[in-house]
Amino acid sequence: MSKYDVIVLGSGPGGYVTAIRASQLGLKTAVVEKENLGGVCLNWGCIPTKALIKSAQVFDYLKHAEDYGLKVKEASHDFDAVIQRSRNVADGMSKGVQFLMKKNKIDVINGFGKLKPGKKVDVDGTEYSADHIVIATGARSRELPSLPQDGKKVIGYREAMTLKDQPKKMIVVGSGAIGVEFAYVYNSMGTEVTVVEYLPNIVPVEDVDVSKQLEKSFKKAGIKVMTSSEVTKVDTSGKGVKATVKTAKGEEVLEADIILSAVGIKTNIENIGLEDVGIAVDRDKILVNDYYQTNIPGYYAIGDVTPGQALAHVASAEGILCVEKIAGMHVEALDYGNIPGCTYCSPEIASVGLTEQQAKDQGYDIKVGKFPFSASGKASASGAKDGFVKVIFDAKYGEWLGCHMIGAGVTDMIAEAVLGRKLETTGHEVLKAVHPHPTMSEAVMEAVAAAYDEVIHL
Image 1: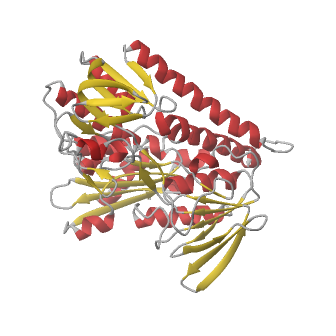
Image 2 (image 1 turned 45 degrees about the vertical axis):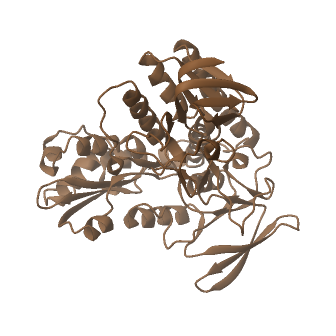
Image 3 (image 1 turned 90 degrees about the vertical axis):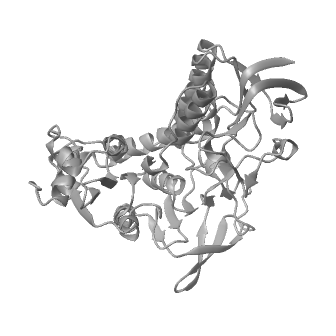
């Protein structure tokens, strides 16, 4: 039986990062993976979707070339080539993880791993043991009873990335990150898209101002948005698909070629041996402490299978913290209140900290500042005036409570707010930090200035 210091079950952005950090710390490490290295994120999630989105953005530029004083005879797209480019990008990233495994002398064990008592993992009949076993098996598309996926007419995100034919009409059920990103991609390429959201606002975890702006931008782009609506029945017996949607005004039947179910995720914890080992679970989440230890010594869990936010960068941070604790380093528990969230539709969305409503609900006396990109020189020059930056500060101490952005490139801008909050900066310190001109990032400084009644360009 092969013996390791650490075995990681799963090689997504949680698993492979955990393994690399463990190896860096001198621990003999192995990764168990049943599919491709990189997990859902690199193969079926974060990376290939961004490749699709980039193709959609470039096509948007071509369609609006005249807005920039340019002439394009006829903008067209090759749907198969767009899909293939996305797959090629994903394959390249997966091969990059293979290289990192070899570079860091990490053994890759291919197959389905099942936990065993006594700090063991069974991989398709072969047993391996380790002093520490980290569960990082991730999650998959969740199915609703009223919306069973058949992989053809009712699909999840995997099928949405590899469709052979572009649908003329698509219904997207759910308006979280997955839903709105695919809605943007397919709408940009000419598919007639309808988004159905159960809650009153799309992207419901975001600040309500952000939700309203995205709905406005989507409608301008030709995407139909139905909020406070629920798909209660689906009929796939005909050529296409019919969805019965319950709305505040009554029932409505929508017809389309395909339905994309984007109603959240379900953790991959079935049949991996949790019951055999006695690891505690609440619903479909593995219970862990601040250092990702389960109730059974020697077994740990990180990423989507735990109660924290189901985000790639969260899984990576948790894995690093977990193995650093294993290696005896002094570590601080992760601050889940300072985790940035990013959505890559167009316009992009990025946020961190409390929304305005959350800050009020928690009893803060707040200062709120908002700066629209319509007043930004760089945004005007770029032809990207949709959106804004919104900041929320505690009026008493100047603490940066929240930052919410919607606009071009904001997913690359949010790190300023994350770092500022980590370093406990105040609004006045942000104001005195000179921001470069002309940039989109100036909007952060201007929004802070607006919160303190010092804004220049409004």
